[in-house]
Length: 151
Image (cartoon, rainbow, N blue to C red; front, side):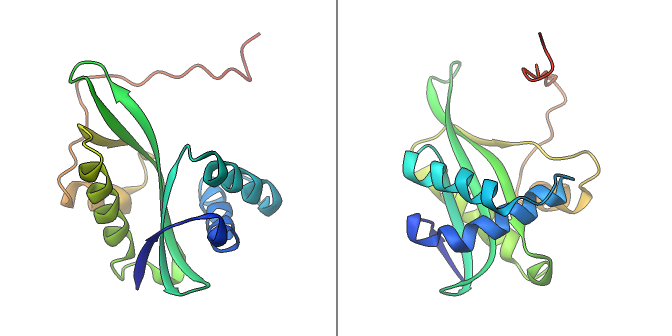
């Protein structure tokens, strides 16, 4: 297995993995839209995607990071928004390797922290995150305003 930073040339490997990731979270399959979204991220350079490969065209999983800023420490942070490992590659260290690469990237860019959230019933992911030293936030509440549902 090799972990690489995905570029435009990896679009056809990342897009199906991203579409499968969305389906994991109960979204309808939509490979053309997934492909457009990933293409925009790669062309716009507004996300960093690391891709786990078995071979040049055989993607095992990916992690997608978005840059942000933290006001209190006055440093950049990275939001780990997407982590997905293909079902056939699970329990083989792919998720851990992708998480390690994301952490390395955060350190290389001088970030204060790497933050993420996951579904409350995604126990496998929670075990991985906690084994890597992530701490569940019991101090702050997360709020969201869905702009598609507000008039």
